[in-house]
Every structure is written in structure tokens, then in C-alpha cells.
Image 1: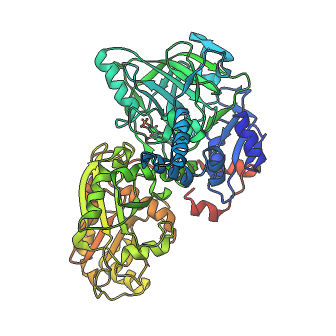
Image 2: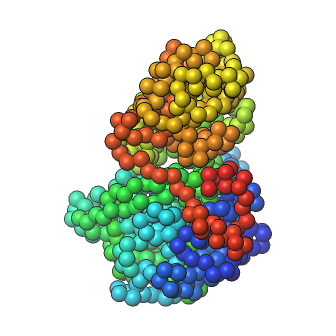
Image 3: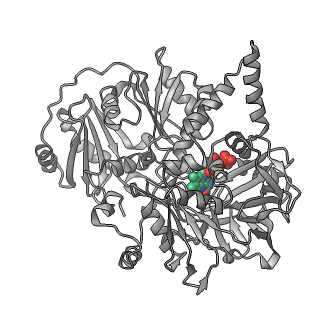
Length: 604
Ligand SMILES: Cc1cc2nc3c(=O)[nH]c(=O)nc-3n(C[C@H](O)[C@H](O)[C@H](O)COP(=O)(O)O)c2cc1C
């Protein structure tokens, strides 16, 4: 971490804050705001307190280490270049010439670095060792990010586990709830690798060893979130990208090996026969994830560097640090995805689609149904299977990040007859699916020619709103987008009093003027001029089997919050929001400086 801090400083990517600040809400709120700024920087908090327990920490807290693309370049490298290198290895052919042989030798030699090395020497991460009762989680400056969080959470923990027979190793990044000094929640979701290992221990009736690293090379964190298949140890990817083996040391109280340069290591065992309520926690979807049962670790040791730095992140409404980490992941994993979908040219997961809610893929279309074939491949491959909404475009489409041009291209090609709605696994964090982790999938094949003109009569926003309000006073506001395309978007806000299917039935005569109608609640800061946050809301809130209805040539998308009126049986979570008094106090003390426009833009 000390090296990371020096590197950030050298590149003018660090802001040091010496004011006395609380681990409860204050520090996370500052980091949340910082990473939404155009020129966001990493933050080093040097004067950290736990006001509630009247405690002062000696160690500083570092946040937003991946504060922008430049920081990602510093700590990970160029995602496109790394992707290209992986692609060249995947396409490796037997060498023909001497030059080929040398090139191949170089590539294979670099692969040698992928195997982590276990060191027997005294490791920096074990300079201080606390065992048993002396290993106290309250000695770490663990942050409470949001008001409704179930407690403090470690947010950048590298979770190291092994399969029961010790043959497979895993590094996963999962949030970890601090219950008390010696008990830590393990939020590995049902689809994740450590959860597979957990089931092996459960069946065998054995305790599962777990070690958690915090800090060290920031690259460990990126590796922890990388969606590698089970059985591929993420630190091999570390070795490949860094071109040097990860150096590990055995934990003090279990057999798990952890990187020598971690700032902290928390060791312990999970008893698979015991579970505990975990959460709620304000997550990267921008919503709280509700309480669920998860395993927990009984801490046996905490080891640390003498001058440790505590690394943390904040998750909530986008954009946040995971935008930058996610972008690198997207680039680096493109060649691996191409092994399943060879005609895939590129893909893009905009961060306001919180990754699993929206993917746009560009393909070389060779036959009818090619896009659908790839949709099913995506929905069947590893963590890509969590994607709720997939839009496929042909190779002649604009750049995937040219938002306006691409949207226009897509809207000109949406054919109501070709919309694919199916069902499958969804991210465990998805709050809108009717059942936990199982819900609707929407696939739009926009690889074909433009659809034919459908002859609707475009009215002005005012005229259309008046027309609708004459039918239902529950409609409050309206805005149309892309009226120059074959499928203009009409977005309305409503004061929801009933199922929106009923409302749509009542207003279906608007088919003469509307092609795609999107409904959002009037409340919850929804602003019809804020496209970024509207997209975030809509793809988060819909389950395509329940919330998309059709009438003649009109598509209606109900993106309101769901409740019993919609026969929704789960609890609908609240949006993640900053506490106003905390923002006011930080502003008064000159630690943050935000105006109403900024607050409105990011739904603060
Ligand atoms: C900031 C951040 C927090 C995350 N928190 C969790 C979490 O609490 N639980 C989880 O299962 N995945 C979480 N993830 C996603 C996992 O890190 C990711 O799916 C990873 O590939 C899991 O590794 P595994 O496949 O080895 O289990 C998080 C990712 C990020 C970037």
C-alpha cells in the first residue's frame, strides 16, 4: 500500500485528508462523492476515528485506489494490450520458423510466472501477529458505509479459500460483515467459487479454513473480482499480467497461503453447519441488498505489517470505483469470451447498467438466429449468465461507447416480433426478479436491417402529456427521446396507485403516438432529464417476464418499484442514499464542496 500511495502521489492522483473523520458514514460519504467527480482522485485519510466508541486508529485508510482510468493503467496495465496478449496465447500454433520458436519460447516463459511461489522467509504481512482473544476486528478501521447497513463491512477483502482436497485454490472479493471482535460474515453468493468449496466442506462435515488479505498490491483486488472459472487460481492471472510470480506465505493458524505483502491478514475457520443473517448492505446496484443467511468465520488470528494501511471502497449508485475496475475486466476478458462466441467482435457493459443489468455486444452476423445463439451462450457462461438485458448489434454498428449513435442504431432496429424474453439465473443482488437469483432475460437482436416505418404521429411532449393526463391523473410528467428513430422512447412518471398493466390498458389508444413507453415512479428522485440515472433505474427495476407488455405495435416497460399491486412477494429495497446531515457537516467543514446540481445529477 505504501508503494501504491507513492505511485498515486507521483501521478497527482492522491488527495490526503488530515481532518479527523469517522469510520461511520463520514469517510465513505467523502469517497462516494470524490469518485463521481470528473477529476476524481484516491483519498488517504490520516486521522481516522470511531466516534461512537471514542477510539482513534493509528493506521490511515486508503480509498478509491482505482479512482479513474489512469489509476487502473498504473496498477493493472492497458486492458486492451493484456487482452491482445491473452488472445495471442489462445491462438498459439506450432512454431514453423526459428523466429516463431523464439517468440513461442518467450510466451511460454511468461506463463511460468503464473504459478505463485510459497516463501518460507518471514513475511511483511506477519510482522505483527495477534492470536485468539488478542485478534480483534475492532482494532481495524472497518467502515460503515450506509445508514441502513447491518454494521461495519470490510469492502476490499481478498478472500482466499481452497477446495476440500486442497487441489483448487481461489481468490474472490466478497464483502465481509463484522459482527463482533471475532466473527466475520462471508458474503460469497450462491454462484461463486468459494460457495462451491463451502459445500464440499459441508458435505464432509469439516471446518473450512479461510484467510483474508487486505491491502498489498492493488492488483490482488482486481484479480479477486475477475470472473475466472472455478479451478483457475486468480493469482495465476496476477503472475501473467505482472510478469512475476505472486509471492505467498502460509497463514499462521491455517494452511491457506496469502500474498506476503498484504497489509493485514485475517485468518480463521468457517463452521459449515452454522449460518447467520448477513446485511442489509447498500450495494453497487444502488439499492440495499436485504438480509439473507450466510456463513461466517471465527477469527483465529490477525497479522499485519507494522505500518499497515487499511484499504476500502464504497459501493452504491454508479459511477464508482468498480466502473474503472469493471472496464479493465471487460477488455481483458474479451478474448476468453471469444473462445465461446468466435463471431463476437466486442462488448460493452455500461456502468450505469451495473454490469449484470445490461450488455451490448457487436457481432459478425453470419446466419439467421446468430445473435440469439450468442445470447444463449452468454446466459450459459459463468458470471456472464447473470446478464438480464442483452442487446446485439451487427459489425456495421457505431462504436459501442458512442452512446447517441448506438442508441439510434438500436432503436431503428427493434422489431417487436423478434424480442426474446426468457428466464434464467440472475445475480444474487438483483432485487426485481420474482424469486431470489432467478428471473427474466431480455434479448434484442438488432443485427438486421432497419425496421419499416410504423407510421405513428409524433406529438409534442406537452400535447402528449395532456392527452394522457386526460385519461389518467396518475401520470405526472413526460419526455420523449429519439423521436427521429423508428422506435421513439416516451418516458412518463406516475404516482403509482395500481399495477401499471392496468394503466397501460387504459391508455393504450396512445399507440397512435408512442412506440416504446417507459414508466417510472414520480418519487425516488427520478428526473426525466437525467438519462444516465434513468437508464440505471430502468434496467435495475425490471424483470422482463413481468414488466414488459405489448399492445399492437407499442411496447410498455414498467420500471416502477414493485409491490403487492404487482403480485411482488419479496421485499422491495430502498435506494442507497447519503445521510443529509453528514453531507451538510462535511460541507460546512470544507471537506466536500458540492452544489445542488451535483446532488441532482448523481441522486445524492
Ligand atoms: C467492490 C466489489 C464488491 C463485491 N462484493 C461481492 C460480494 O459481497 N459477494 C460476491 O459473491 N461477489 C462480490 N463481488 C463480485 C465478485 O468479486 C466476483 O463475482 C468474483 O469474480 C467472484 O470470484 P469467484 O468467482 O472466485 O467466487 C464484488 C465485486 C466488487 C468489485
